[in-house]
Length: 229
Ligand code: 13P
Image 1 (spheres, rainbow, N blue to C red):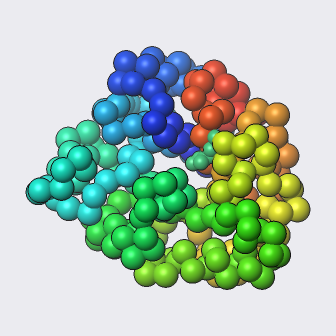
Image 2: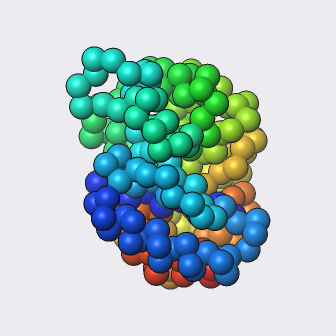
């Protein structure tokens, strides 16, 4: 299983260091085949040793240059980062990242050999139209994306389940993952209100290869409990 923590705009450099110290100890008890990823905010990126990988939540597709407010390859390389989250719905919806921009970012970091955790997910109005509309929407989020890329992990995160406390149902996750796997044969994570109470049920679903966790990942003890569940 893959367990990924997306801190979003939470935690500082100091609190991330404390978090990692707690997590590191807890992870001695994890199954060797389980993989853990932590995505702290950019200001908290650092070179941490342990049985987990640190990734960036976002970066601009450039080595360096004049892109005010952005970080590029040079800033990530300083901390040995080679894992990146791309396509999160918050970046698509709240920050206006188009599919074209997302694909451009994907191509750049793929060429750099980055491991990419690529997110897709539909809004509620699409979910309400039924499975066919959902798949059409989700597959469009693979436009310009090389789904054969060897270092690709996909995260399916229905937007209406993110931060709402309302996870998708087992049936919704199972059927969507099964349908997605017909197109893309990559590790497929589920994200959206995953927490200690539903982790076992979600990771037991066929076609779920892991989870991408927001709110419930912010506490190191809580996230560790989920990994060790
Ligand atoms: P929550 O776990 O807070 O719903 O967030 C999910 C998410 O967006 C992870 O990327």
